[in-house]
Every structure is written in C-alpha cells, then in structure tokens.
Image (cartoon, rainbow, N blue to C red; front, side, top):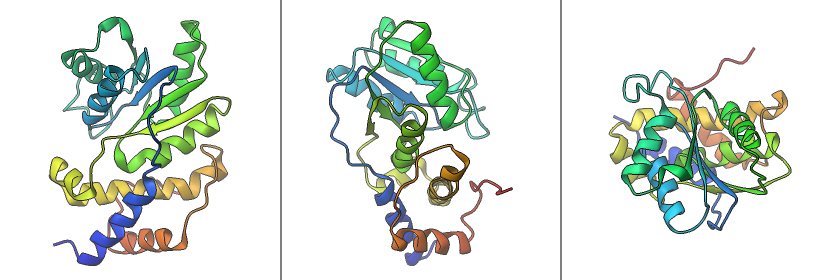
Length: 217
C-alpha cells in the first residue's frame, strides 16, 4: 500500500518535470523511445496538427521494452504513427539509442546525414521526463530551440494507464536523480530545483522507490 505522503511527493516530482511549453511549429519532431506508446500517439497528433513536417523516432530496446517491443522502440513507434495516418515518407527511424543522450546525439547525426537544416525541435517524451529530456537536449544541441511535449494527463491517469504506481514512482525518482547528478557529468544543463521538490525526492527514496536510480561512482 502506497502512503498518502508518497502520492503527494510523487505529485510534486510530476509537476516539476512538466515544462509547460505551448506546442508550436518546429523543423522536426523527435519522439524519444520508451515503454510508452503514447509518445508515438502524441507525436502523430502534433504532426497532424501541422507542428512539424518530419518525425524522428529514436530508441533501441531496454530491460522494460525488449519483450514488449522486440523490433525496437523506434520501429514500434513508427508502426504506431503509420497506423494513426502519418505517411511513411514523414518518418525517420533511429534504432540504436539506449539512453536520452544517445537519443539526442544519434537523432542529430541522422538529420545531418540527410542534409536537414534544423533550427527547432519539438521534443516528445513521457510526461515524467519532459524536464530531463529538455535539459539533455539543451546541453547536447544548444544552438537550436527545444519545445517540450508529452501526453496531457494527470499523475493519477498515467498510473492508471500503466497499472503500476510503484513503477511510475520509481521512474519519477530516477528522472529527478539525473537532474541532480548529470549536469556535473556534462550530460545535461544545470537547472534550479526547488528545495520542496528535492525533499519530496528524498522521502520517496527513503520509502524504497529506488529501482531506477543510477549508481554514483
């Protein structure tokens, strides 16, 4: 049974991860691979709304997706987008990235290889990783404009869609830890984090929501 305090703390982390950007037309949309097909759904919807003429789906597989998405996250995203009416000619697949940094770097390299001049990216991620994805892209691709997007849903609705609150809380804790430790490693930009948010993160760690933490060497 997850405590009321844990739900409150998870809500703080969820709210902080949201960048609250208004979607606007960009050169390209990049859908970051994960276990969550709603990223492909949101990307396809933004395409249909005229927010970008081209999509890159990026991602190999991970321990959470290798069974669910055996052909690779990016390929499953592509298939989903095509089912939703996006033309195949508007989708590029980057099938090798295994973390957010590689998602950004490999997508950038693919677009450069295709001779596509990029000035802005509509970056689509899971709702609880908007800020992490944004901070990574700003570090690795600083000369372009980054607009963040994700499925517009509440924490409760997202947990209902995943059917595993513990996993979502673990993911929130893992995403926040990276905001704390990755800037000094050069993986993302430094951001100001309210003390209340970090206190919530520490309480969730103490309650055992730790499976997505990275080891600090």
